[in-house]
Length: 290
Image (cartoon, rainbow, N blue to C red; front, side, top):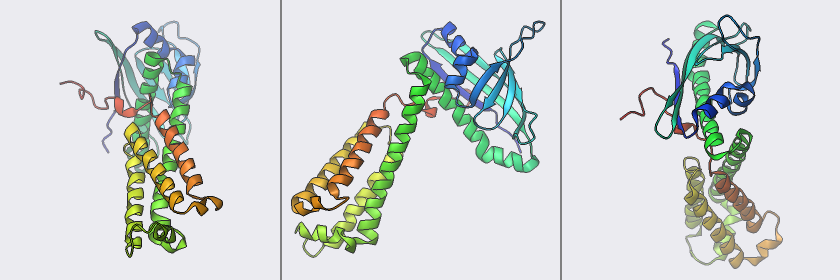
């Protein structure tokens, strides 16, 4: 099975010396690189003028590397997928930025099964983690957002948007399409807006809510999707309570549910700003050239 090396490239507006320091100093490197949980200096090779490191990774191997633009890594652990590998980091000075890129490849254990697992899951995950790490580093250097803040914001953002999408899908599907008689249909009938067509109107409303939940997945970084959802939540809650004020006395009424979803919506919109994104990186060599 032919392997495709992992390649990641990103332009960073920073000073060359600062970028070099943040990528070649173990204490700084381990803060922004999602692949490694810790990086430790090993005894320096005075004859070859190289600096070795011990890497402990979050994703699946331990290895050593030299403090050069080239890197060799591997693991003697029997359970490690990666047997050995090599690659490089390159720093290209541009007029107002530095092109920071990496290319590396590795051999796997466990025969054909390991090759399939690597091709289908591990290698895409490792490449994505590399690209996301590069963008975390860019935000640190360009906007002074520490990696811990970027990663915390990312976790909060995806947790909020994931829950919000799930709630929209649930509210649109379960009470409006599957069990409308449980209460939603009577609420629609109490509005007297669609006489004789309340069930159809309820299903159209449910379809709109399902659509909002699905739209959030590809557009979760865009402000307009949260503005649209906020307007929808206010309209749904306001309309339901205006027609049936007694709903306020019930547990988990439209006001409570909409307020919770609105909180998730506002948090998702707030955390979408300066969110690290692996898509900002070039993943194929020469892809950024015109």
